[in-house]
Length: 366
Image 1 (cartoon, rainbow, N blue to C red):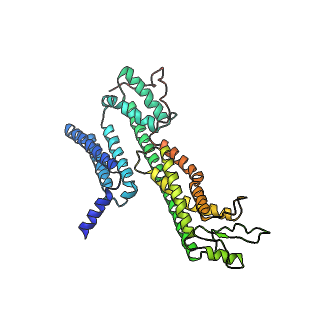
Image 2: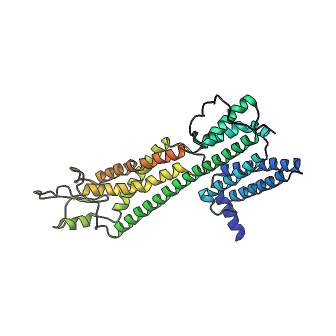
Image 3: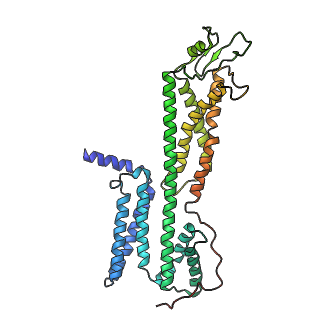
């Protein structure tokens, strides 16, 4: 039994973002090799040994986090974020093992990270940009420069994690709202099936004042020749338990078409959270509910001149219109999603213009 569960969890784990998981694992192997090389070449340096051991422990934690056997919450991709946090910490420790001269060759990558995640007004980013301009002219760094660079990189990576967590929070909120709307749609269909004549989706063309005859038109069937003297009795006779279900299905299909057309405006994301999918799923229960609510508004005379649909086909046609019209409400969510995605890994502003002077007082290099 234990073996079966292990195989099942392994199979389920492959449904996650496998490429991102392997990217973290391969990067951890690369950093481990570099750390082991530092340990062997600086065997007498206690500082190097201590920092390298701490970095190796962080790599171990990163690999444990991305292993779905070790992390029960792999489905929502939180394990990848945790793994990236430990990986960034290990890399920061490796940078601290680098001297000023070694950091010079790393400056292009360091500058790219800082500019991507720190605003242009951040003093740490400004300082790194000045240092980068300085070393292109002088080719050297001081210990103070190195500390500023390391601090800026650490803060930039924390900002990167916060952006990823912001995407996760957005996805979770949309998922909860989708679940609530889906439950509401199912509950509405069940209640309407149990008591189909309580709030029928039927229309009575020809039942206005001064008219002697009328018919009852519902989504599934119609009563063209009323059998009873009272209007409510004829409406109850024409309703069926599946009226609401049919309208919700039609609205859901229309919403699915709307979702397919709007996906072209949503770019993909390198984060482990699938924003376009949750946006598309949100539209489905929303379309089912807007189809029902739209017909109820028409039946109540909210739209003048459209309160007397005279065939089931017209009711279904309006259900399609209202189901597709959910886009009026979910478009705001789409726009917010695009804003959240655009903020991930996007440069905050162009690089500051190169200063005309040196970055400030500099201690002599040791």
